[in-house]
Image (cartoon, rainbow, N blue to C red; front, side):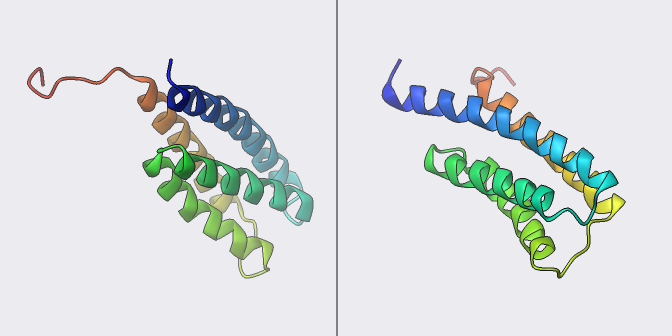
Length: 114
């Protein structure tokens, strides 16, 4: 296994942990939408996934996560409120990021087979 492969594997493990923390924080925000610590946890999870994803070649994950991170930066700065639709959308985004990670584990398919 190459060093790049080891870094990519480490990123996937870290991202999986962060996605778990993200989900926990989002679910807690349903009951405590004003909790700044929870809002910051959501932002930091997204920020770390984005930055590490970009560093290790997961460009799709980094680009998608950047969009969600931007929304939570606005929440942190008081421009957006935490609402049920925002939490639902962010949970769906979390699921999408997980799907992108899962697809990155799939073996490459030869285009001629498709």
